[in-house]
Amino acid sequence: MKQELRVRFAPSPTGPFHIGGARSALFNWLLARKEDGKLILRIEDTDLERSTRESEENIKASLRWLGIEWDEGIDVGGEYGPYRQTERLDTYRQYTQQLLDEGHAYHCYCTEEELDAERQAQMDKGENPLYSGRCRDLSQADRDRFIAEGRKPTVRFRVPGNQQIIFKDLVRDTVSFESNGVGDFVIVKSDGIPVYNYAVVLDDALMKITHVIRAEEHLSNTPRQILLYQALGLELPQFGHISLILGKDRTKMSKRHGATSVEQYKNLGYLPEGLVNFLALLGWSPVGEEEIFSQEELIREFSMDRVAKNPAVFDIDKLNHINAHYIKQASSELITELALPHLRTAGFIGEELTTEQHAWLVKVVAELQGYISYAAQITEHIDVFFNDDINFENEEAREIMKDPDIPVVMEAFKSKLAALEPVEPAAVQAILKGITKELKLGGKKVYMPVRIAITGKMHGPELINLVPLIGKERTLARMDCLIAKI
Ligand code: GLU
Image 1 (spheres, rainbow, N blue to C red):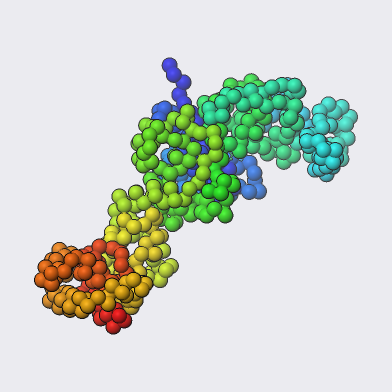
Image 2 (image 1 turned 90 degrees about the vertical axis):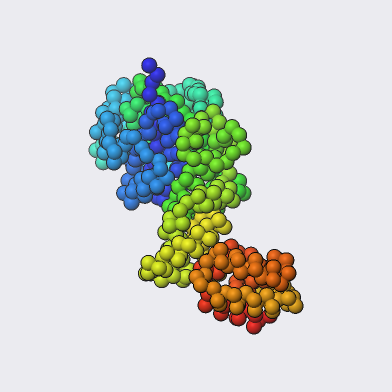
């Protein structure tokens, strides 16, 4: 029987949930779904100073919003819990004792000051700073003396010398490191809390993780982890390190490049389908040219062997292009909902909307949905529905209105609209058509000037929908306002 694939996403809850983390979670999730495996969510909170429950909540909420559901782990439980590292300290302790008993680890009594001085001396000599192994073979008398001085030991792993650590990475192929370049490293701090490199090994092994798919920044941790697996006699998982995400200037993606957290994109009114689609393409390339993929298609198409070694570039224009596709497909009610806070901040609407105002707004949003990439962008296009003090957007628009045929077109439209009841798109269309026929003018001499008279602009939402949404009175008033400015 084929072994069940078990992957995990193991964030440290130390800040906003970064899109890089979301991409790692997504790749693991896609793999789990494709292979009928399990995704485990584990919280790596051994950095007590920086870890917060607030960040953990934010990560979980962001994952759920993206549609990345986990099968085991925090909140949902499972056979291999607990799934928060600070709740697993007893388990780590047992294995630490085993490592100490077998001589794979030892207590180190060096103080921070001593270690700093050692590092400094090595760097002054132009050497790589590596722990000298001073506490490797302490006598019982030395130990007793340090304990009597009140020193609290860390536990260090005894790195075997002269070994080549070679592994086959699912993304980077064969990777090798020399153990001599890895100094004996701390696995348990003096307060009894294990460090990431140690806890991660025990957890991945005990949770029966088969594939560790994570960001490239952990590649250099992998040799330490492999040495620990070997010392503990645990079976190695397969590793896959997915490449860094760079900004368009090819430096590491950071706040300078714009929004970096999932929540920021959510708040701007991006859709989870759009973000997931985009994140999937950050490092993975599908077989053909197609860029739009539903979650089902991604699950079907995704494979680790099409995950690239070279860095992925975060191209916001591509995200916007992809998200625009999903915005067009979404219901206007949803986009309205997402746009509301932005419309309030921009001052277009107040806190409360009547049912009629809301219904009107949904229709307005429906008109604009095709022009935006994310909901907050509605504020850049909606002015035309609110602002009745119309001005020419440029001289070209004013020139068009100076044509000698314009006054009669304006009069014709105004009088027909004044008589129209109810004002509906088809009826407005009929008026415009009627005018071109009666006055024997081309469409250009009618549609564009009427649009300019109502909006001041040469382009914008469908004219025949715009007029009913603005309403008869406001449309007529706007036309007078603009005609006076010719
Ligand atoms: N807690 C680590 C991080 O957030 C996870 C590393 C790993 O996946 O092994 O970077």
